[in-house]
Length: 251
Image (cartoon, rainbow, N blue to C red; front, side, top):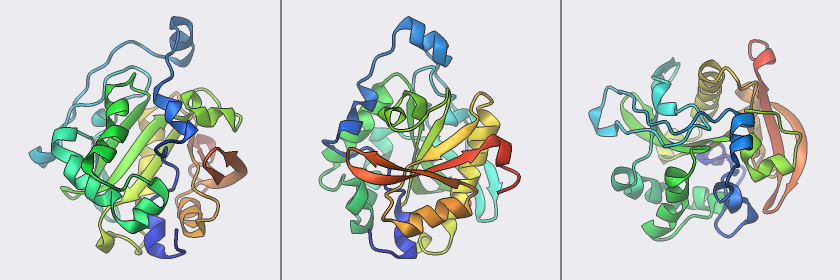
């Protein structure tokens, strides 16, 4: 991705790409023993209110990830922010439009007709709940796309020393006007705080932006993450970024 502030806010370059081996994230099926080990509590259906009824949505099914729909709004320096679970029938045109922005498509690789984006969303929405695709709603306006996922249950865990309940974050900021002004950094910090506040079993929030995307790595550093390692993933060489609960008030 071009080294610009806009590219920093456009996405973290860490989302699973079509046709890559990371896609088996959502094909994995856990045994009852593993579900017990990682804290699955059975099916959960959740919903959460937001001020704008047009962006209210039920949370994804599954007991592997505390549902972001229940996390509520958070006041940030940029405004009131909330994660709202995606509904394909409502949100697909907007998310697909963002995916077709060249700055986003360069790393997410989900450009094309809406069916391409739908094929990326449906396995998460219909899966076991380990990944939650969400809209980021700022002052009542959907302006970003997020994936909050169990990194310890993801193929990413094969490439770093994962710990139980490690939680991963993918982000893209949709509107060009919202890029290049530090908004991505502000929201990354806010969402990492939400994860740590709402997921008491989680000690670390992780991300794996493309190592070549210096602005993206800088955004994570500005949001209180630290650079932990370089990872050779199937589709990229990544920077493992980690925000630890124990250091959250120091960074």
